[in-house]
Image 1 (cartoon, one colour):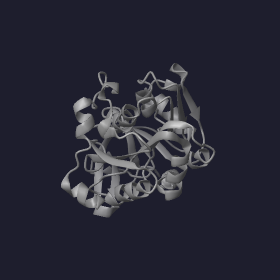
Image 2 (cartoon, rainbow, N blue to C red; image 1 turned 60 degrees about the vertical axis):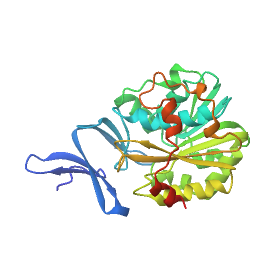
Image 3 (cartoon, rainbow, N blue to C red; image 1 turned 90 degrees about the horizontal axis):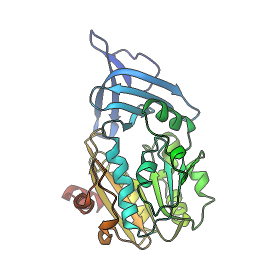
Image 4 (cartoon, one colour; image 1 turned 120 degrees about the horizontal axis):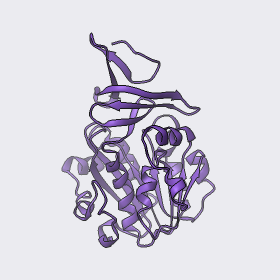
Length: 292
């Protein structure tokens, strides 16, 4: 294989020199390959390597440091699962903060809830927002909806200044490398707890329950020390290794298993619906065992 650029993960293969993107799953000795039709954009921002590729199976892909983050064909799945569970669980989520999520998919899903009065999107890298807007044809939700406020800061530094402000805190962190590393540490969860109102709740993804159960287990363990209600739920996300992804919701008061499902804004969704809301909390035995 001949690497065509200095970009992480991209290689040319075979006599026809087809372009592929490979995502390593080091814990399992596994590589996931995505056939790339065209490399549309690449750059090194002050924080990370950003690229956009047209893929054969997933349409346009936003790639950070060689790892796919969002695709035009199925990116709605991750964003719907990350947002609709907490926003349905909380009966009156007026103030919402989203750390990460530079593609603004989570913000667009949050904006479906009319009782939300303010949405703060805290993104460390402004170039991710700009590149997503240019190449992924995503509407500029922060221009179309005056409830959305973009804050370009390191999420860890920003949250240190927040105390008892938010009803819902959504953490759309990338994998635990580079600028997102701090968002997996116990100190961050403590700051997140402090940033929430007395009945606030927190949600984040916790990686693959099969390929990287330690991330899921550690996330639950840290949050259990802070919140009285902590639950894991799952979704099928085709672009991620293994196709199954875990999320953790932690709440000071509201239990998603007792949520008023009438609040769920699902009719224009591609994935989430009332039946799936509850079904996503049904865990396979191997996941239950990993959480022990």
